[in-house]
Image 1: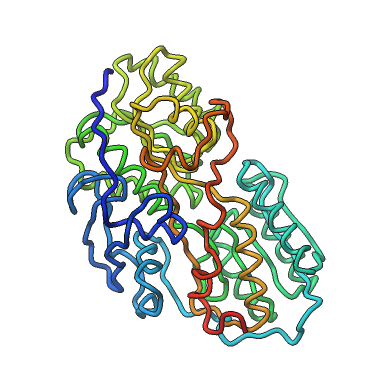
Image 2: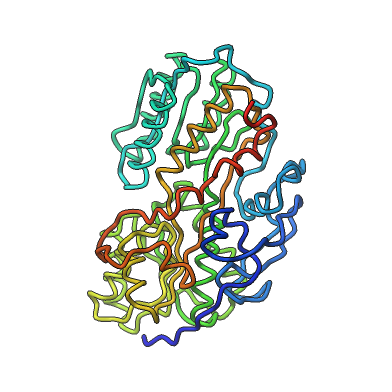
Length: 419
């Protein structure tokens, strides 16, 4: 299908939710902050010119904050909670301080390194703990990313070691709620890395996945003028990140009556699998589609599927961008590109920073420490991508490490920063 692309320009307002560092990349200023109620205002996504409530806009004022806790944060930070799936609660660790002043210990319960992001983040957590003089008394990960029972067992093993803090990347957040309460009862702070837990007894450090997906989806449908057929590429059915991704896509498509979903395939967050499944779809749909909306990290595989099928590559919402796809987009200046950076190393550093702040008595205000993703578009692509990268390179597009929870932003989440 031959596409006629519309190139939206970055708005002069609406992007401060991308973080202080992102302002340098995008040159944008602050958006309307998230409201403390559940109203459903909408606004144009950074990188587009879509009017509020129209196709290509993202709902705002959707944070789940019944107690008004986000009012204590800056407008830029509180706006980053739009579409966030969990309720914001006062942290159960707000008045906690370790009896120790040094010689801290930690246990890590993570995921197997099935993706480059998890492998890089996990290594960053280990290095950061060691750099801070924290002794790792146990490190656990299940043999398979779907082995929930084993990970729950491993968490209990970690708890039995009585570390000063547990850092946990949950496969399944729902059963982890009880684990968070058990850790609290034992007096052991639990920091949830990347995958949030819906509990006041855990402090989650994560990005806002539904908002990120909604933003790149909004830019992508805006690039085709809000009309046409799209293909959806799902991740792993039933796991939280796939559910969050679907929420982000759906939030945008609700305002797009002229966008029709031509089909849905499952890529399991694996570029090779996504490529195979998209090629199967294209074999029976030779007219192609106008755009692709995906759950994340599969951009290169989806792009390859169209090229291998002899078709023009349509706009692909590229959450969890790679060096390969961003480099390819950089070499094709007529291609409308919307992706997000994935600062895996900085994520690990921020997780450890939060853990140490809790132990030192800085007092986390809330249970969910959330940072919006940095949106990459034609306007800032050349600043974060390198033309020398191989177009097949699946390495995460890291961006500027200080775009994710730099010290001044982290300070906002604590009652006594630097104590």
